[in-house]
Image 1 (tube, protein in one colour):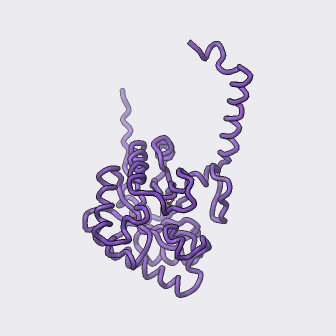
Image 2 (cartoon, helix red, strand yellow):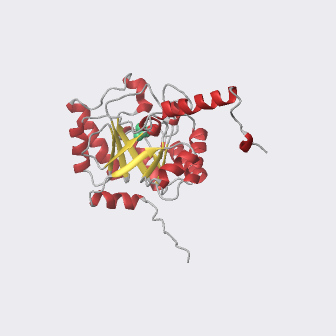
Image 3 (cartoon, protein in one colour):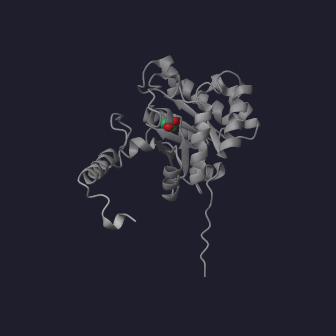
Length: 271
Ligand code: KIV
C-alpha cells in the first residue's frame, strides 16, 4: 500500500490564520535550489529570495547592484526546490521606485518567470502607488519597513531605526497604509522591540521581524548568517545555529590533505 502524504501549501491565507491562532511564522532566505529544498523539507513556512543575495551570493557591499534578471534567476532556482513554503521574491533596487508602471511590469516579470507566490518591496508612503498597482494586478505584496537596506545611501548607516518618536510614528502610519493597500504581511527590520510589538498588535496582517523583538508574529534571518557561513556580520539580533564556516573549511582542508597524500581516491573510489 502506498502512503500518500499530502502537503498543505503555505499561502498568504495560511499566514493570516497563523497570526489569528497565535502561531509564530518562520522565514529564512534562500537563493538556490539545493538550500531551498533543505529549508522547505525542514518545515519552514516562508522562503524569502532576498536581495541580500547581492551581499552573500555576489559579494557586493550593498543590496543595490543586484538586477531584476539576477533576482529572477535566484527566484526560479528556489521555486524548483520548494513544495510547501510560501516563496517571496524581493524586488531589487530601481525596479519599482521610479514609477508604478515600471513597478507592475517588474513584478509581473518576477511572477511569470519564477512562479513565486509573492513579491516584497521596501518603503511606505513613497512607494504606495507602486504597491497599489502591483496588488491590483493580482500579485500578493509583502512590505518592508524600518531598516531598509536599499536606502542605505540616504541614511549612511545600518544602525537601529525608529528610536525617535517622529520616525516611529511614520513607521506606524506607513505600516497602516501598506495594510490598507492590501499587503498580506510586512517585514520590520532592526527597530525597538516595543515598536515591533505595537505594530503587530495594531495591524491585522502578520508582521515578520528581523531585529524587531519577540512581540511580532514571526521571525526572518539570512540563512548564511544563521548557519554561520558569514563570519564578519554579528548584529545583536543574530542567533547563529551553526558554525558552518569552520565545518566547510575543515572538510575542504581534509580533502586537500587526502589529495596531496594520494589517499584519495582509494581502490574502491575508482573504476
Ligand atoms: O534581503 C533580505 O534578505 C531581506 C531580509 C533581511 C528580510 O530583506
